[in-house]
Length: 258
Length: 230
Image (tube, each protein chain N blue to C red):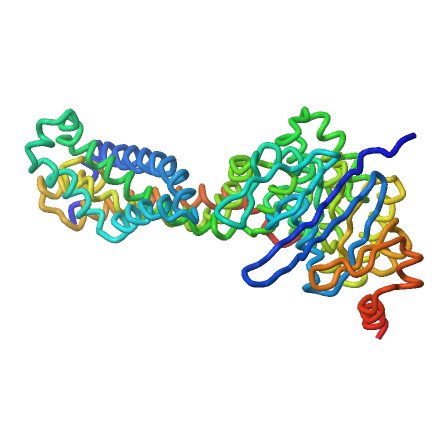
């Protein structure tokens, strides 16, 4: 079997907030079934990088390919770029489900309504099918018995599992996790990580911005360490964690162990 | 006390009650329809879209309803160009002037109520909609506006009551609403206290019904805000 098309290719991404350069040329290649953990201290640009992939942030320059399809951008007013075709961006976003640090469930909808909303409206799945798929996904994350609850009536861990079910219901090609456990009480982190481990075992393609070192070490196929907008370290977890080449990553690790 | 004058003129009061309900509900409905697009424009970051709406709401919230109705009903008729235009058959009628004035007035208030509710949308909810591929229009339709309507409900309930009380202005420009009916009874019988108290009771009755409706609406649409009960 030949090399298949990578799920995500990012080439030379630059991003600036005002005078602050957040990303200074980041590239990444994620093949199908890969789990890539993106590590870094706060301010390293790791969340911004993830958010540039589905264009929640617009980079200054760089290319993003999803399953070989380039997100077309055009220059606008000097050094900025904007999407050439919003319809293309929306279609590509629907293949890249995102899970947020703050869950971002829709407060006026029940768990089940949250889960079926985008399949119904974006993918135009028939309602019966969307409900059936929603039930499966909620069972998978252990939230089926809470399907009629509103988000405000759930714990953080439950909300995050519901948000993961919402992402799964889109049957995404790639899942983007933006610090999914950082807003959770310590005792609730485990239940979310357990669901994520299950997804990794299913062979889902995942990009995970995280501070969970055990997850990065045990679950990911690649680890990427970012520092001040640059990739400092990249490789398979055993290599990266056992024999880090970068002094910064060593400092980062020892800082965590402190 | 001459309560018999109230009883003798019950048909007049009933007609006034019906007229008030008709004007208030029609202008509330039209005002809401007007306010939905205006509130979206008003909350836009594009100044060319938000500024004209701001000017509109500033005028209608910044001046008394009575003055607005006088401007429309008596003021516009002063201009020959208006009297000769196709609009004159509408603008010479007190009923149309009241309906237009009420609609623009409540439309302005509701625009600002909704604008506040739209701008209070948690940004994460919009990002989640964007991230799963919803278009801007879908995000407004499914996420922003449904949330905004729910947040706006208590303030909107107040606006409905204010609009009801503001509608006495119809009685001032010859329309036979509740206040108009009471005024007429008083003119026939010189019983200010009895006729105005009869009007007051009818207004209170409507307010009672309005608060009941909004209580039910809140229990239905604010389920997601209630404390958890199990």
